[in-house]
Length: 365
Image 1: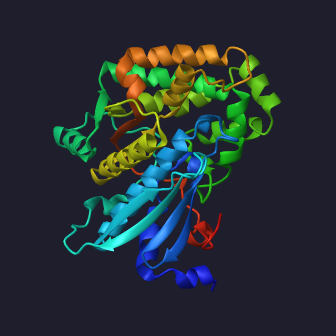
Image 2: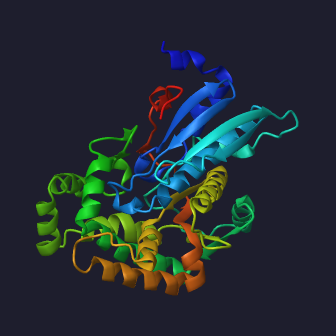
């Protein structure tokens, strides 16, 4: 047994074992834990902007770290501990770092969302089309902290959201920069994956998945299929349009003020996690739909994300379509988007790295 494992007491281990199940883009798990003593640790975060086109400003990774902090606080509440977190303002934005302390709180009620932490997952396949009940929507609205609200896309707007995702998928699937990401984050021939996304969780049928595996080995194959054989059509139908129609609703989480700083995105990640865990507790399944928001933000900020001609213009048009669907003000203040509905939990899903792989020695830079 290593020295790090010896220093990790049972209570802190319980908290971190649950906390590591927080969601992160493409299952990147952008955090490591430096244990100081029985009730104190440092969370070392990082982003993936140096190699991921979906994280060029680091904000998606920052939301993931926010989800981690919220999950950690929920887990601690079940042990009558209150979490206090302080961000190190002297660390660069690429390395969000937090000092964490757990304090005794004998009067603290266990957060009921703790029971949903392990069950929460991404369901990319078809969901039930029945409308959410008033009780379900009320629980989801109440779950959000002050400063956030839900913009629902139901009825005819559900179809409009599905078509937006279908068009957005073409942008993703015809961009070399995105291909490099997809190639690295999918684990093929897998039902589960500790550090990537298993191909069986993508939502495509076995034949399409097998073809995708062969095509995605080389960008030249991808480009040929996209140009001459409508190569994006089957994946977009199966992974975007059909699931987009087969759900109760799409939703957008909107911040009271448009997020700009790291702390805004950390807070948004905490709100997102409470919403998602509440959906799980209600017996609902959820799939994030973040890329339209990400590329719209790139467009607004003039951030060049692809060297391929025409990509910036296509993203700008998709941004206009999203704003027309949701409203310009809500679209610019949106922090999270997804589809939701009743249905079976995912049969294939991303797991997490073992806790021992997420621990770093005390005093690590």
